[in-house]
Image 1 (tube, rainbow, N blue to C red):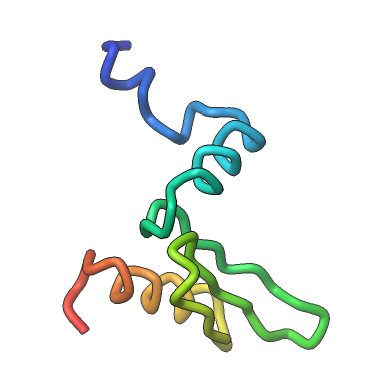
Image 2: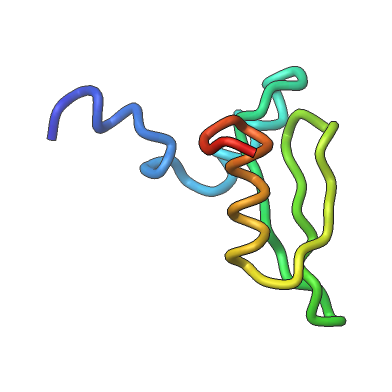
Length: 73
């Protein structure tokens, strides 16, 4: 494993990852797609300016990619 691989956020513990997101100051460093008790997926971003509902995980992930500019709108 290279040093670059060790810096990957996927290798962080969940608490460390969430703390790093909380300290980003409005940047799009983390998005969440969480199911609620009504079968809707709540989607939000660490920037604080994106908060939507989606009907599926796939829809939420696609919307998050559009939000961050990973795919065209």
